[in-house]
Length: 207
Length: 185
Image (tube, rainbow over all chains, first blue to last red; front, side):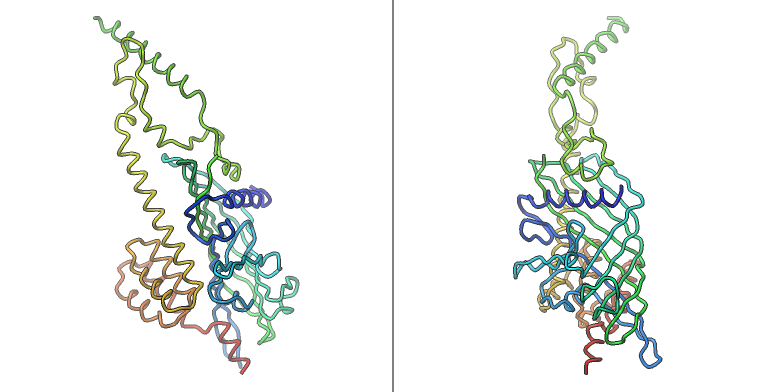
């Protein structure tokens, strides 16, 4: 499956999710299911000749973009959003040029449980990038930024249709993402390692 | 009756039942719309197998149809199969709901949310416990570190122990937000 097909698939799935009728789990805003995106990162840098480490999470990303508590970083239809159900918004951070999750599939398979539905597995290579000032050309034109890449596995599960409704869930995991980060305070690019995951579920209207 | 005649009658009955079943189910149901999302899905994949298994078999009008021949073994006792599927589905749904709730809570900053997350660190389900460790890290409150350490000391699961210790190590480091604040002073 090529990237375009995957993105189209996600768009179709997301479109279906938008018509989910009831009792959705996960983050639901404006009749759309968003799958939370977790990022945990470690930066390595030098201060006065000493190597130091510091951490960052998706929460830090949201703080650096001035989003309040209760906002969640989430993945939907190939883009990354800042979703705040309480305050009523879902900002497309990818469209703003601030956060990207780009998946490039290299293999896939599907299985069909006896209970119905199917399970789709995919693996490949991905990029997870952050640019606080939306400059994705030069890291050092941002107050904080990172570009990272590594392997991922992705699973889409879909149940049998029951009473016109069926359940779906998606999850994505990465291992050993590596790359570079830039922090304005230090004025140089540092080594960066991270892991990221996406997990969400919901109920859709059947055919 | 002679064995050949019995066999002939049984075969005739089987043929009759097969014909009736085919007439009542001329083709598999259409694939759900979401299967278009995944092009590897074969078009004739059964999407409502449990219901199909549970459906009663219409008695054959042929005069000599032995029931043992007409009914496949799996249909002879469908209830346990469906019940097991439902139980698994309910359990999976409950686990997913717990994980979704944890992901929602981790975005907050209040003590009640942290308490709710820490409670799930001892959930009977391993997947929920793993999600609770992740949510604790994402929540980012260092007051949770002693709780993680205590659990790491008592758990017998080596993988979970490592995950708890990794979480402690991660949370013990300064965050970039803190480093940034320190640089500003």
